Image (tube, rainbow, N blue to C red; front, side, top):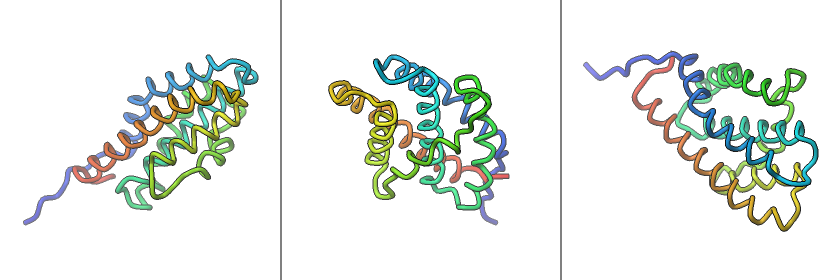
Length: 165
């Protein structure tokens, strides 16, 4: 007889993950709100939230979850994320509509380069000045890289210890 991992609900995993990431979401949205001369606050919030969604997609797809697991989890994660999105960005727009530029920036060989590219896209979308870009690029890149890497590790631990249902 071999060891059979206990089941974990995909819905609970998605809800718990998004709930646990709210502090990170808030930090990124707050930092974007502090950026000077970067357009209106709605644009800043939408771009921040789109980059956050792209970071979540990147982490789940880079984890050891199968493609089938990802196809099952991502809609559940989106469902859990939508209340946060709607609170900050309104109900008229959706994360998938705004995150393509961030997902295109991914580097399959390096989560660090992926985070840096996502941040470059974010700062470019917000038209951050070159003088501010140097400071904020380092800050945001470290935040995004840490989050993506820790999420990949978290998802890998779940995959190795549980079976998704």
